Amino acid sequence: MTEWIDLNDALVRTTVRIDDGCDWTAWIIWQMCANWRMRNGIHQPPPARPKVAVVTITPIKKPKKGKRHRVEEEEYA
Image (cartoon, rainbow, N blue to C red; front, top):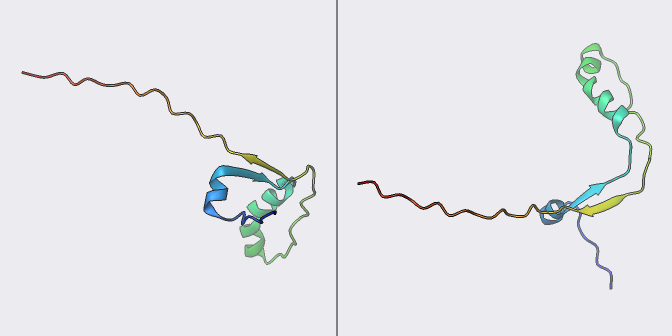
């Protein structure tokens, strides 16, 4: 039986990276000019975010913990 997973769950967000496959370049540039458009009273709808790749969900690899070196404390007399 297939179960649905809530992708906004904190545990899921920390274990997988979700790529929607859209090109966000034009939207990011549009967003950078948002204050300028508000100040000048210009309404411009957001640009389209065309699909350029399929949706991918990849696991995030946790970095391996390095060997911990024991630090021996020297006794000071």
